[in-house]
Amino acid sequence: MARPRLSSRAKARHPPRRPRGRPPADLGEQRLQHLYQVAFWHFVVNGVENANINAIAREAGVARQMIHSRFGTKLGFAKVVLDKVIIAADGAAEAVQFDDSADPHRPQDVLETAANRLLETLVTSEALRVTRALFGGLHRDQRLIKIYAEYLGRAETSIASYLARAARVHKVRLDTMFAARTYLGLITGLYTPEMLGIRSMCDQERRHLVTRTVRVFLRGIGLTRP
Image 1 (tube, rainbow, N blue to C red):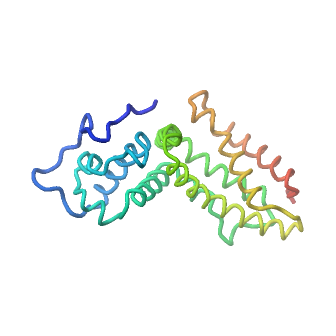
Image 2 (image 1 turned 45 degrees about the vertical axis):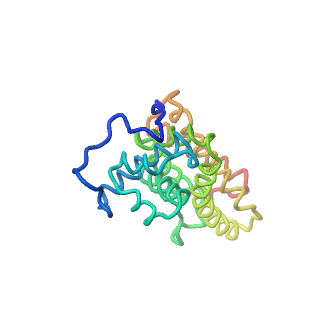
Image 3 (image 1 turned 90 degrees about the vertical axis):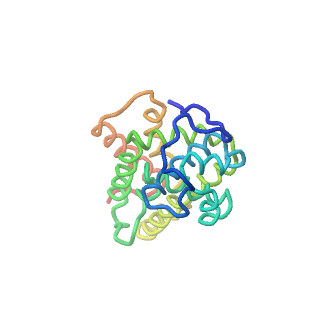
């Protein structure tokens, strides 16, 4: 369910309590995470341009000057906020990070494992909440789209790097970045019904779909299971 629209220049309906006096100039980790959550909703509901730093600072119970000194510009702050909140919620970019231990001889196993890991994080309640909010806000601000695209770009780059190694082993010519985007689109498409609230899948059904999807993907790009 979409979160009610917030006024950037108005107090939150239930602002968190904070000690009397001036807000702290620096933050502990817990207060920093709270700031990210507050700012995330302001950015996705109002867009980067219309989000008000004063309103964010007031609702989060922090000093406005601290936000500026720590993060610089509003756009810089928005990039950090979206990155932190998305990673904490679904970790998509991290779920499909491949290092040198990923066996290029076994693309079915490697990509299937990564896909299952990705979907397991995406279908958690927190990940679904953040994803729905983010997708609902992307149309309001082109800068939000750019930030999200940069986030996805890290996942695509890692996938493309692995596919390049697999293509060399299998002696296949491959547009690795296009293939990486196709793979990521196919896998994330599997959880779209859950993201939209249309239906949910059990783990067994999800894994079965992943196996079939990866098999079709590899056949399409010329990498077959050894």
